[in-house]
Image (tube, rainbow over all chains, first blue to last red; front, side):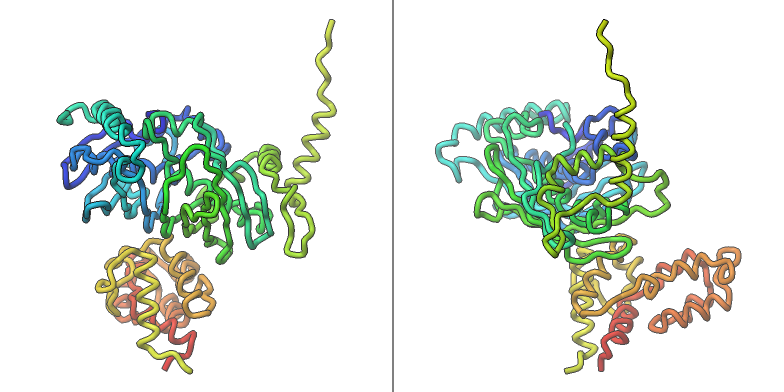
Length: 159
Length: 187
Length: 130
């Protein structure tokens, strides 16, 4: 998974919360453009880190019941500080509510304990078989691939 | 991974409305292992494309003088996933502009379908952040030209957009300097 | 037809719920913007956009954010706002009750003064609500 915005998951309490970290490496390619004279992590990548942590929490909570866990809505994502090269963004997410298809989470990212970004996310869970019958065989494949990624991010996760 | 999340502008009316396109290709890095077997475009990168469309619309209105950064995503809604082969069309309109911030609304369409919509707030960095412009002027101009900004861009009177003086001067000075660089000599 | 104070409150409440992501029940007249509702400077930019749009008014930055008074050496001494400074604040923001602040006019406490009610009174003065 190349577009992985997490270095590792520090804690994961199924059904409750997740904590993960991402260090902004000074040699990240996109820093050349964002910005040439003031390299900082793009705000949307801070959002992506919060979304990815949230998605792992959701998947592990439901035992990977759904292969697809995508971002449906982001609300009041406000940025309080920049992540500069070398700094670590610690993201946390808490499940607020969940129904058959949607999970609402409260998320935030901090740098050295100070708030850098916060907001709410709604994630949508589904299996390809439900929407695209011809893709039903992708579900188990995708679930398996994602389980392996989670295992690398959180070695202690129950398989 | 470079940080260009639009391919080019197809319409651009100063201070009012800009339309940019983003083609999604399976070969792009963000699809690599993101959702194997059924690649989808990360929502965050769609928001970034929409922010780049709106940010340049706001910046151009202000002659690219302020340092425009994303401060808040009010609400972003994704109606359907975007997948490789889609051509996303981002339409940005300026809701309000002040001396230190701006508000914009942007939609993303895949064909006729509304794929996503977002309300974005930008802040202009003040002198708590020293260090001048975020981009080198000459590279910035090259980027805007690559986005076809000065090919499709129009003022509200329908006149073609031109570079603000600061950037035009920087481009001119650079070109004068290029003249002076001797060509490699083959012996 | 003139806008009533009730209508002002409802619209201010909606703007704050949208901007801050708080619940309607939390937005009461006595709630402080910073302490109770968690508003930060980025939020104030957004709130101004929303109030201007909801009421068709213009809100100059200085009228809600008296940074210039709080950083002026004539009005601040040893981290406390002077009597002259307080007079200036009262002139700038007549919709705020400064009684509690006057008892302990620490500059850093200022941001926690503004209540939802103050914001409503400010909007009322701009739209001439009955």
